[in-house]
Length: 150
Length: 141
Image (cartoon, rainbow over all chains, first blue to last red; front, top):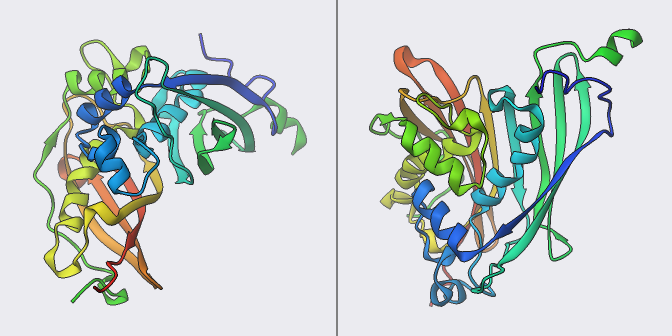
């Protein structure tokens, strides 16, 4: 089904974007799954005590969700060989039914043999919340158009 | 004493073995809202960032080290890198080991870089998690 991800792939190719809504429910679910119970991720009291404008999402939740853009595209998550993000801005999650939407975009930044580097962008309220986010994926095959160049 | 640049190279004993279970993988994928079929069924592989569940135990050693005088409520996760040799998968019994790579002292804060190596049976390397933490020093009263 996903065997042809490399077809027509070149630097600048955009992967299908993803918009995800972060709600308090999702934060609590992630806290339990990741066993990260820092109260700034569920308690307004502790978030404000820490100098934050409100309850914020776990950086690792944003990081993990952002990678879905890449794994949705490649299909097989075991093809991801490295992943880096800088946490540049907190994602504040209001205590209501809607939460906040984070938009994830990804672009092919480099292709070397079967290794594809994807640059990822995460935007919340018009601001980038991740910096220099990059995942490297080994497609395990030559990317066709590169074979013509050499 | 508090953390200094000389703490670079400090190694901690291996964490208790962690057994990767199918139900935990699926719970983690669901928390990410990820319906990838590889994370479900009898023998799922783990989402790449599942490594953080295991890494967190090693971070506890760092933040709990009395010699470093770190306070978790003044720590900000600045960046995170994962390098994978293979996916974590159901049935893996893995061990995490933490080393402090680098400490940079700034005015009012410290930047701490630490690596956690996750290995399987026969010391098979599986994944490395490198994090940078910004620790705000307490202002003397």
